Structure formats: C-alpha cells, structure tokens
Length: 344
Image 1 (spheres, rainbow, N blue to C red):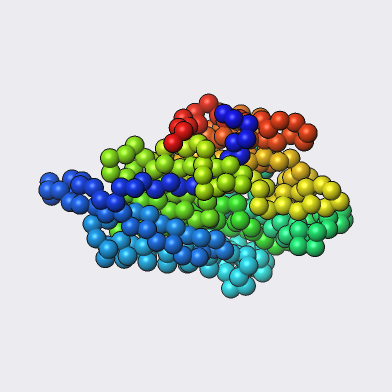
Image 2: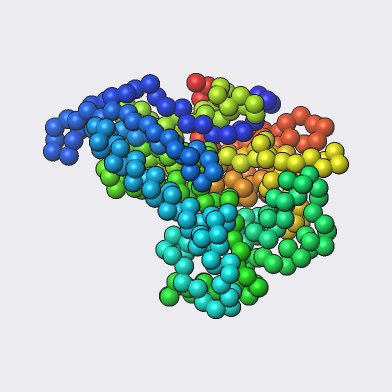
C-alpha cells in the first residue's frame, strides 16, 4: 500500500450494468434493472441503489425506505426537541423508561460495543460532545472545569437495562444520548431491511458514507466500494468487493478545529474528555452498518495497534486505515481478515 492512501471515506462504485436476467421464483426468468435515488436525510445525503423488475417496484420500495429513515431521525436526533432522545433527556433518570423498539435496539448494540471497546465508544457522552461542539464553533478549548463536570455526567456502565420488560434507567442525573457515531449506520441497516421486505435484496444504502450492503448485483461477486485519497474522493485508489455487510469510515479529515496551533478532532476520547490530537482514518467492515459505524469511531480513539488487535479478536470485524504520526511518514495498517484490495 502506498503511504498516501488515506482511507478518508468509503465510496460505493456502482457497476455500469443496468439490466440483467435472473431466475424468478416460478422458474422463469425476469429482467432486473438498476435504479438509484437520493435525498437529504439526517443532515447528510441518503443514496439508495437497487435492482428491481420495474420503476413502480423500485419507487415503492425506495419511498418506504426513505420514510423509515425519516422516522428514525424523529427518534434518534438530539438536534430535534421533539425526538425521543430529547424527551428521554428530560425524563427522571432513576425512573424506568419504556423506549421505542428502535431506541431499545440501538442502545443494546451501543452497549455491547462500548463493553467490547472498553468504553472507547459511548453514546451517553452527549454532555461532552455538546461541549466540544460549542468549542469547535468558538475555536476555543473547553474550560477544564467544564470538561471535568461533563465527564461526571456520562458513562455507558451507568445505564441499567431491564431485559424482561425492556425498560431503561440510570444512576446518572439525566440520560443524554448522542447517536452520531452509530445512528446513520443503524438507519442504513433499517432502510436496507425495508428494501428486502419489498423483495429488493440486491441493494445498497449509503447514508453519509455509512453503507449497508445487500446481495451482490447480477453477475458480480459483490458491490465495489472505493477507498479514497484524502482530497480526491471521486477517484479512489483502492477498492474492496463486499456483500451482505456494512462498512463505514471515520476520521478527522473534514471535522476538526485548530486551537493555538494544535489540531483537535471532532471525535472525543471518553477517558480523557479531550478531542483526539492523533490523526487517523479507519475503514471498518462488519456484519451490519450500525456496528461498522460504531467501531469506526471507537478505532479512532483506540489507535492503530489496539484497533487491529480488537479486530483480530472480534468475529465479523475487520479494519484498515492510515495513522499519521506527527512529523513522521503515514503508517498504513489492517487486520488479518480485511477484504483483499483490488486496484480497479
């Protein structure tokens, strides 16, 4: 791998194949055509590509998938005052709360990954991420006392799950959640499920670079996903071919702030309370996009060595990326089972 490979963003590269003949359920053949549509969603671009028998089938499924993503935004967004996450933040934390099925599911996924990453990923750290979001806007470091105060206000291990009744509670003063590191991946997974439910299993959902991947296009081994240079996303240097999985890339290429000559990432280390100063970009392949999204964020916090060790010891998880030590040559890395790269 060349040292200028940045893993800045995973990009789906669609085949030029627009129609293919495939077996139908009745033993006859059916012609599938490729359809694509995009919308703004969750503050990013939602792009769906799928193979269907006709425009009506594709449009019906696409509209349903887009509607599912919009519904999830009403649950998971901490920017919306009417979202379930915002309502939960105002609920007495010591009183059991009955979450929606989606909120329960994503919190259980997040809790599992928090434990596997020793807290490098933590959706309860909204008090800290809010603090750093304001700091980036003001181009000023958060006050040390405010960081210390925010660190006392979160902790994934302080959330209590009542498995039998699907209730949550906490020893925190309030349950403030930030799903920025998993929400779009989860939404992409759910949109892909909607497409499958509409009999469109040959599909891909890309929500701001968090990609849920279904069955491979006709006549191919999978969907070709490009790994781009830092400043040349339209011309990937390397590709991987993926099917029935999720992938996500995380790093500080576009979201960072320079304060007093030092660069701080938008990704915050839960243990220190500080924005990362290590520059690293990680692409993750996992069994679904929600897990890939969360692990990509966690691997930034963990650094290349711990990220690779985690992947080599975690089923379904594969990572690859580049770390940029200050004043040194970029250091590429990847786990043992990361999909083989192809040139084009």
